[in-house]
View 1 (cartoon, rainbow, N blue to C red):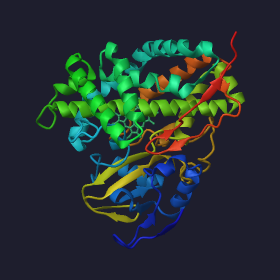
View 2 (view 1 turned 30 degrees about the horizontal axis):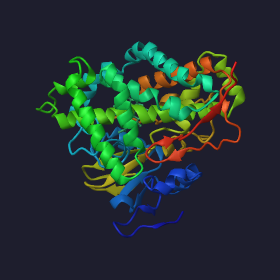
View 3 (view 1 turned 135 degrees about the horizontal axis):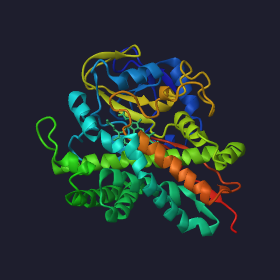
View 4 (view 1 turned 60 degrees about the horizontal axis):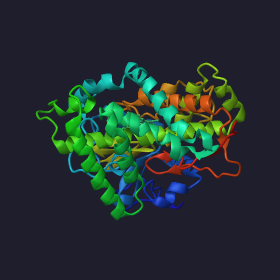
Length: 405
Ligand code: HEM
């Protein structure tokens, strides 16, 4: 990869062609090596891609922008994960895209839907979803676990958390799947329209006390959200809840399949081990790779001057391997000494992942149920598994086999 000094916009930042949005980037094997080189060179670089934006590679710069003590950064920005995973709706989504006091009010209003206690109340339901899904493939002796399992449960859970009535969740998950897997821009536009129409029609049918019912009747900042904002909020919530948990779960399974002894200890239900494996997997390969921020007042980040209108992408996987915080950050170690709260896979600051308790619960339950039902599930010999890089660190396939009785 070539890198040279910038000179075009303003002096200072290193110019890079690192571009998480370039489809060719999705399959690079050495993405962490590239991030390490960039991290070694500068805290913050600039790219001309997508109209130009800055990229933060080092932990302190990433944490500073996300924590936003200066008030210089806004979450309402057209770069990062959000605009790539939900239909393009021209409005500001409550909570996701608002800042400051309004954002705090939204978080407070919805906190009880995301608490550890709320996650625990959903556990039995998630177990039932897992058992139903496993029953559909267990007799086959083989399956791609990504398609038949880890991408099946999280959309249903995200729809439940949002408050979509149960009878509509499978159809909604199907619209969402079609939208996410559309192969051409035309197909994406068609699926996006169908998904948006289906979702917005459902919003008339939700209970008042549900999350979306609450958002619909709450006035923060002077007005209640309009139907377009409710649809965008819902689409972002479904995206936030499903790709992340699916790919994180697939990443944990891949780690277990590649480590026989660790896998055997997890199958034997060693207390606390699966939780430690999930925490370390999420640290080493964060499912959300980038988050965007817009600069709203002049500031400096990592020695680079930023002015209103600039956009910054925060690369969480780079923060989590920053040698100044995680000296051996590339290694997968379940007995890691650094406190798990120090890692940034869930983000940090006001917009830190509000769904992390739900995510950890559903990933744990998906793996517990799978290994309880099929303890000898393993990768198909010779199968080439890989991780992709984009706005999400993905595991596109997990071809597996197991013995039948
Ligand atoms: C392993 C799974 C997950 C990971 C790695 C993850 C990661 C993240 C990250 C990095 C952010 C911060 C974005 C920012 O700074 O702007 C975020 C925000 C968010 N996440 Fe998650 N997430 C996961 C699962 C979930 C789930 C299951 C839900 C909901 C059911 C969820 C709901 C949200 C919401 C609503 C936000 C936005 C919060 C705000 O803007 O205040 N996430 N997530």
